[in-house]
Image 1: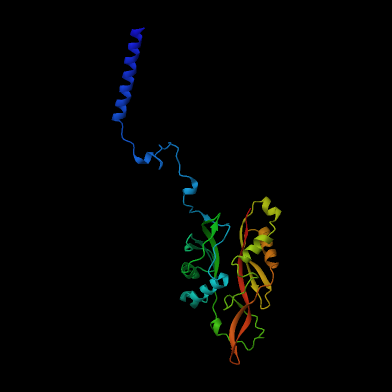
Image 2: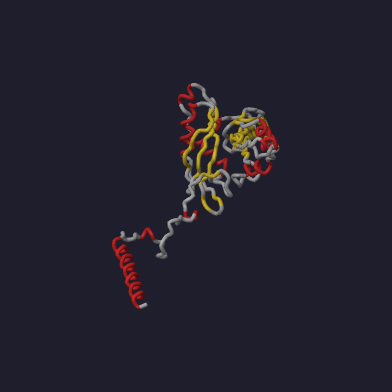
Length: 289
């Protein structure tokens, strides 16, 4: 019995000595193998999702980005800073350029690109003026600032005289000219909310069942005129997706309430007056399954 105990003790000593030698010869651990509380990391350790920076680009968020002063201020900025390309001016090129861009987490305009254009000669200036936009109030989702995709229309319209110098005969002038920019752009009811229009559209869209069955989705751009009485008229598709969605987009735009009409200032008998004008606008109508 004593002999067996002695042999067992010798074997245990040999095992312990071998393990110690292996530890002595192995590479020392780095601090990267440990967490902040000095616990060794599992080989499956991953940074929690909430610690990762969210650089995704969103289209549907809890709070959308806002341009300081609203849409009227946005389009006034574009009108004030737009430099008509000389080549386009010489060739009498007019039209619209749809520019997609991202409003970053700090409100900066990022990655502007043309998604639709009436003429390539207008594209560079549209990109330039959108790139020059001042900071927006950034959008947020689930309590955090996020990057949000936006699309706006840059209109190029040639006039023999600048709009601001137009001198109508009287405030009751029945001129039927349609403008793209005026000093006071039309205002949708509830204009203090920059997204009043998009909220109305999203709340009143009735997704066609046939379109759902076909998995149709996307954005339809609808052009219309807010006339001098504030009515929405001359509705047409500027860029469509499918007849089913296009028809619904026209229906919901047609059901918009009256707008506050756009106006241009002039002087009559030495006094400044505001003359209502017919103004062309374009809005995106989004269909998301």
